[in-house]
Image (cartoon, rainbow, N blue to C red; front, side):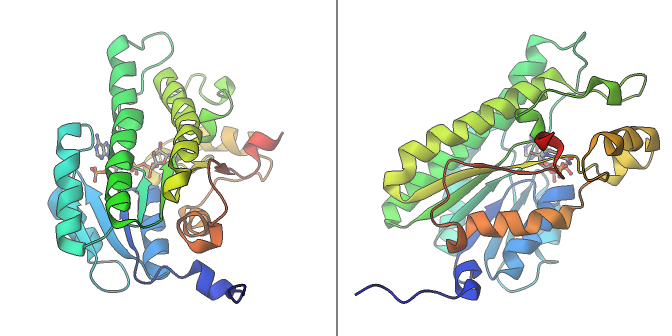
Length: 267
Ligand SMILES: NC(=O)c1ccc[n+]([C@@H]2O[C@H](COP(=O)([O-])OP(=O)(O)OC[C@H]3O[C@@H](n4cnc5c(N)ncnc54)[C@H](OP(=O)(O)O)[C@@H]3O)[C@@H](O)[C@H]2O)c1
């Protein structure tokens, strides 16, 4: 006999699940972490600074969240990080690979090192952490969801006019790595489907943090003029997407790149 159809509340409910969010206290990671906690998950939030991670974990709704220091570029620490989560919480169900930080050179000045560092942090480390989580899920014979945070700039080329004459670049290393990450997402989804692990990307459009929008109103005006919706995204506008892909509401979605971009890539 077929299972009874679950309600929409049941499908989006993350109670009893453990979700890791890397770079969680940043501009977008903090809203996505709150979304997962509000949906009932227990969160493991990371920062390169352990105290910052612990302080942010304490702000999340619900009980039992933990904050851990984690420098994903130091990929040798990944097995120990996953083992510590297993030891403290006993399980991992969801991984949001969100943390990113690298140099932002112009197209005229970018070096091999700029490319190597960006790819190492934003692709290699994402892969190694995702694989360590999949090995954990295999040991538990449990399903899981991995969400890689891409970018609209991994799908379309830049908009050079927005940057001309301003102290902000559209770095080529960032475009290369985000495109690679979105394609890697498809590859992993195909391989890990038999393990019941879904792998998707969320690609935000323009969500400039106050540290960017504050000092550069002209940059924001140019981006808004280019956007079909005529405005920038707000972090809470990623909350629905991350809970959809993390929860059973997205149980037949894998290998996708969900663009949350106000229509930027729809022109
Ligand atoms: N904002 C946008 O408009 C936008 C658009 C498209 C895509 N995205 C993507 O969305 C994600 C989040 O971006 P955001 O705007 O929220 O940036 P953000 O505020 O700078 O947050 C990113 C976090 O990553 C952590 N981090 C940086 N380098 C790291 C490293 N080497 N190892 C571990 N953690 C590191 C930092 O946390 P700690 O300092 O606490 O370690 C930082 O808070 C990124 O993948 C970004 O590419 C953003």
